[in-house]
Amino acid sequence: MPTSQPTQPSHNQLDTKAQAWSALFSEPMSELVKRYTSSVFFDKRLWQADIAGSLAHAEMLAAQGIISQEDHAAIQRGMAQITQEIESGAFEWKLDLEDVHLNIEARLTQLVGDAGKRLHTGRSRNDQVATDVRLWLRGEIDLIGGLLTDLQKALVEVAEKNVEVILPGFTHLQVAQPVSFAHHLLAYVEMFARDAERMQDVRRRTNVLPLGSAALAGTTYPLDRERVAQTLGMDGVCQNSLDAVSDRDFAIEFTSAASLCMVHLSRLSEELIIWMSQNFGFIKIADRFTTGSSIMPQKKNPDVPELARGKTGRVVGHLMGLITLMKGQPLAYNKDNQEDKEPLFDTVDTLKDTLRIFAEMVGGQLNPATGAKEGGITVNAQAMEAAAQKGYATATDLADYLVKKGLPFRDAHETVAHAVKAASSHNCDLSELPLAVLQGFHASIDKDVYECLSLRGSLGARNTLGGTAPAQVRAQIARHRARLA
Image (cartoon, rainbow, N blue to C red; front, side, top):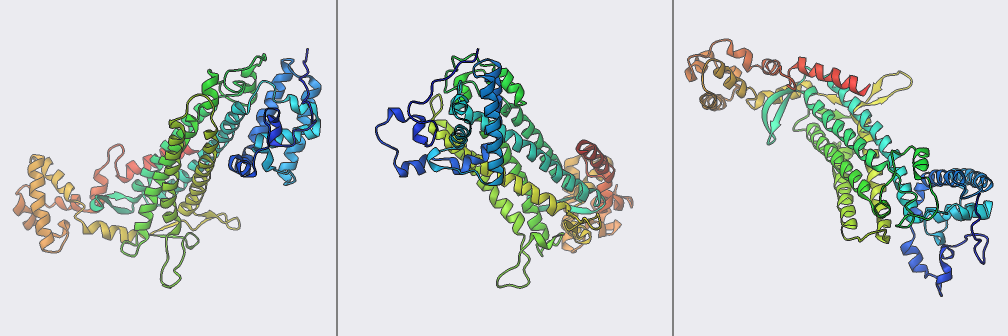
């Protein structure tokens, strides 16, 4: 049979924060401490997760006979009204009530009386907030997964249009070997694909239920925690009550994955910045993603990539902050953990905003009138190919040619170095050296050498899995399209 919980001795409503524990205290909390300890003005974004968790908890309490079906119905009715009030902006968030949990509980008690007070049976704010953050973060991870897919698709679209475009590949920011521009972009697709995998891995460990662990030791009420987990779509329950309320590994792990994703975005940003500079001129970025100068009218500044590069430091800083937050905490819950939310929230917001804007900046925006993509990256293929001609990018191809003629690679390497030196002194490319000059470096060189010394010959020769040959690049594009469909 349902059991009634004792009514608070003096008030029918939970009107202030202090009334949650005021019987023990002889003086009210100072206004300064209220402001210092309050979290409601940033953790109120957890309201949907808080209500979802409370409704699942209430349903279980009723099913277990811990509260009556009438109380359960009243809680459902009150939460529906609170949801409407929050969504409409009519809900009054009170500093005195400290956090999202007490604000919602107080309003529920105003609306449904003692049934609202019974909702907290068998739980603590310690397991409640741990549940709320996990539920909220699970949803955000799902949104981020979609944004990562959008960005990968945008990169694949640009790659598909530029398979035959030749870009100088760099090591040490020196021209190394020619690559397909599409191949270069697909390197970032691989990075963001790993980011998506990491996010799904984090989601698995996030999607575990702390609720029912109460303050730290579990509860005397006959809770069915597995039922609550199933109602909330969670994969299981935390197995140790101490760990359940104090664990923030999932937040740190998410921020770590987000930091690495931002590092990838920062690397792409750096290349976009270099490529669109006048000294390179490889690409143009749509005007809506750039700004001008207040004093130099000719300037078009890549503000979006620059800001993404800067915001990467911000997210990595949040990771360091969360690790430091947890490193000295004894078990179980401590007030320190209130400081987990702002860095976590900002990390989520920063990553989502950056992914969203990069997908549009790379791939363009759909024009609803024409159905076509507009904006995005504009590629200057001629500038890329001209740059690839400047740095003796096919020198390795000449070495490989000599190896196939029977020369040991180290000897071939030395021979080509002399050829490059000669071409440099004549201010020409290797492919522009006369055959007689090339044969002077090794007698086995024949006129077929010019095919391997051409940029396109070099590109096509790298026709192994993962290579930059157009046939391989098209195969990779097809693989990514199937994966992202």
